[in-house]
Amino acid sequence: MKKGIYLNDSIHGLISLTEYERRIVSTIGFNRLHDVYQNSTVYFTFPTNRTKRFEHSIGTMKICSDMFFQSALNTTDTMLSEFFVIFDREYIVILDKLRQQTDICNEKLGGRLPEAMPQIGLDKLRHSLIPNNIPDQYKIMYLILIQSIRAAALLHDIGHPPFSHIVEFALKGVYLEYKDKAVSEKKNAKEFVEIMSKYFEGDRKLHEQMGDEISEGILSKIIAPISADDDKYQENLFELIILETVKRIFAEDGAFGYLHRIIDSSLDGDRLDYVTRDVLNSGMDSGKIEYSRIINDMQMNIENGEIKFSVPLKAVSSVEDFVKRRYNSYKDIIYHHRVIKTDYILEQIVKDLVKKYLGETVSETQRSSEVLIPFDISGLWFPLGDKKSAIKANALSQWNDSWLLTVLRQIYYTEYYHNEEIKEDTVDYLLAQRLAELLRNSKRYHSLIKRSENFKIIDDAVKLELMNHIDEIETYLQKENGLSYGDRSTELIRQMLENTKKNSSGFVLSFISRYSKYMQIESFEQMVSDIVKAETNRVVTNLKTYDTVTLFKRISIGLDSPINFYNYKGALSTLKDISGIADILQLDSEYLPAFYIYILAKDEEELLKEKREELLGGIGTQIGEQIVKRFQTLT
Image (cartoon, rainbow, N blue to C red; front, side, top):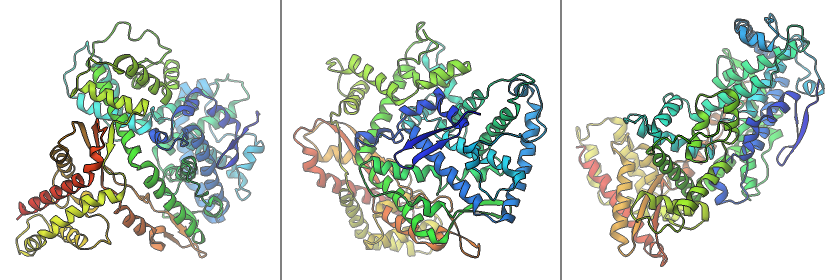
C-alpha cells in the first residue's frame, strides 16, 4: 500500500493526507482550486487576502475529520452501538445498489458483485483515523465513514465557477432574462439557454450541482479498473463505497444528512477554517479560534434517531468567540463598502459581456479546439455542456479566476482602452468604465456610504419625517377598522414607531428593510433606488452622472441551524438556550447600513464629497415621506 503525504498549513500546521486523499488532490479537477479565490474580489481591498479554495479545502478536511474523530471517541458505548446500527442499515442499501450496477462492477470490481463490506489493510494513517473505542466489527465501517467525511470536506468547494458566487449570480441573471425569449438558431443565445437550463431551473445552485458532477468524476476516475482475479478488489470496493457515501453526504440522504452537518452547519469545519484563515490573511491579527477547546470533547448524541454532534457546555465561551469572529469577518471584510462595489462591478461586467456575446451570430471557427477553453466570455459555460469526460475535465481545469481576468483584460485593451468612438450614455461606455476600475484601479464609482455614520444621516432624516407624522400614524393604528391588513403588520408598524423614538434599537431603516413586505410597503428596495436616483439628479446639478446604484445588504449572524451542547449529565441544549450572543449580534447588525450607494461620475472636483450630507439627508427625507404616504393609503 502506498503511503500518504503530509502538507504544511499556515493555520493548522502539519496535515496528513491518506494515499486515497493524495490521489484526490493530485487530480486536475482539484488543482483548479489553486486558482479560485475563496473571497472573490476581496483582495482588491485587502491585498493580502489571497486565500485560494485549495488550501481552505484541505484545512476544512482536517477540522471535519477531527470533529468526527473526537465525537466518536468521547461517545458512550451504548450511543456508539446505536450509531453503527443506523449506518449498518444504510450500507445494506448501498451494497444492494452496487450489485445492481453491473457496468461499474465489471469495470471497477473485475465483474464481481459485492456481498459484504470490504476487508482491507490498515496502514499507519488509517490506524490513526480510528479511535481506540471502536469495536473491531465496526472498524471498517467507521473508516469508510471518516474517509468519506474527509473526502466530502476536500470536495465541498470543487464546483465553484471563476470568482464563485459573483459569476454564478451573473449567469443566472442573464439566463432568467433570456430563457423565455425567442432565440434564433444562428445566435449564441440558443446554446447558452440550453446549457444553463440544466443548472438554473431547479432549486439547487450551480456550484452545488457542478460540485456533485466534478466530485463524482474525480472519485470515480481515481479507482483504477481491475480484472476478475486482481487482488485490488477489496481496496476498489472500499473506494466505491466511499464514492456512494460522499454522494449521499452531499445529497443529505437519510442518516448521511447528519454527517453533512459537520461540513455545513452553524458550527462546521468549513466555517471553523475560513474564519481564522480569512481574518489573518486580511492583515487583522486577532489570533486563532480555540479549536482544541471546541473540538476535543465533542460527543455524538442520538435523540429519536437523530444524530447530533455536541460541544461540551464548558466550551460555550469559545463557541461564542467563534460566532463573533465569523460575524466580524463579514462585517469588516466581506461587507466592506469597497468589496461590495468591486463585487457589483464584476457581476455587471460579466452580465454585459454575456449579453453582448449572446446577441452575436455563431461563428464557424468558434470551437476550433476541444482542449482549450474558449478565449472569450463563453468559456464561462462551455465546460458545463454535455461533453466526453476527458474533454470536460480539460475544460474545467482552465475554468478559474486567472482565465477570466485574462479574458477581461484582452477584451478591455483590444476593444475599450482609449477607444474614442464609444459614446457616453451607452452600454459600452458603462462597460468600459467598469472594466477600467476593475482592471486598472481607476476610480470611476464613488461610495456615498462608507461607514455607519454616513448611513445615520439618511436614517435620522427618515426618523424625523416619521416623528413629524407620528400622531397621524398612531391615529390610524388606533382606529377600530383603521388598518385592514392584519395584526402582524399593525404590530410591526408599532414597533417601527418605538424604534423611531429611541436610539437603542438600531437604524429604523434596517428594521423597515427587513419587514417592509409584512408592513405593506411594497417594492421597498425599488422605491429607495428610485429616490436615490432622483435626489442625486436634484442635488448634484453640476456633475454628470452615468450610473447610480443602490445595493441592499443584510448580514447574517450565522446561526441558522442550532449549535448543540451537552452538560455533565448528558442533557442537551442549544446555544440560544444558554447564551445571548445571537441577540447581541442581531442588535449590532441593526446598526449596519441597510444599503450602499455608488455613483459613476467624473468627479475631479469632489462635488459628491462636498454634497454628501445634503444628498444623504434629502434621500432620507424622501424615503420618510414615501413611507408615510404608503401608510396613508392603507386606511
